[in-house]
Image (cartoon, rainbow, N blue to C red; front, side):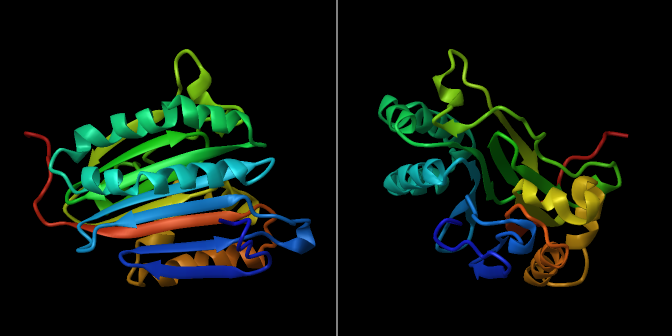
Length: 257
C-alpha cells in the first residue's frame, strides 16, 4: 500500500520469489504529497505460477485497501484455483464473481474514491489478464517486438472499482485476454501510469520500455534504473511496477507456411 509506504522522493525495489516489485512515490519538489498505488502478489511455493494485482487509486487509497483485503480473504480459494489444471477457464469467472458480490459492492459504496485494477496470472506457457481502468500490461519477447506487438491491454478510462464502480452497471465493463508465451524468455511488466510522465512522455512509446527490459541485465537492475529515471526527472505522479520473467521451453504456434 502506497499509503503505508509512500516512497516519496525515493525508489523502493524488492524481489518476491520470481517477481520484482518497485515504486517511486513521486517528487515532493514537483508537489507530490501522497501515493495511492498498491499491489498484491501470490505465487506457488514451487514458483510454477504467479498471480499479480496492480492498483492505482485516487481520491483516497480506501478502494485499493478494500480490494486487497477482499482478495486476501479469498486466498485459500484463489490458491486452489491457481494451482488447478483448469485455472485458465476458472479464474476469470471467479474474479468476476468476487467483484460482483453484493456485499463487496455495498462496501465499495461506503468508501471514498475508486481504483483502476489490473490482474495478471501466468503459469507455464500461458498467461491471463483482466484490466479495469488505465494500468498498463506488457508482454516482451523479440518475436513479438519484431511484429510491433508489446502491450497486453489497451488503457481504458472511466472504469474503476470503488465508490464509482463498473460492477454497479447493468453490464460491467472490463477487458481480459489470454496469451501463449513465445519460446524462450518472456518478460511480463505491469505498471501504473506515472511512468508516462517520464522525460516528456518517453515511455508512451512501448518499444522504449521493451528495450529497457530486454537486455543482458537482471530484471531487478532494469527496474531500479527505470525508477531512478523517474526520480531524476522529478516525476510527480507515483509509479508502481510488477515484473517477472517466464521461460517457455515447450514451443509455440507459427504460421503453416
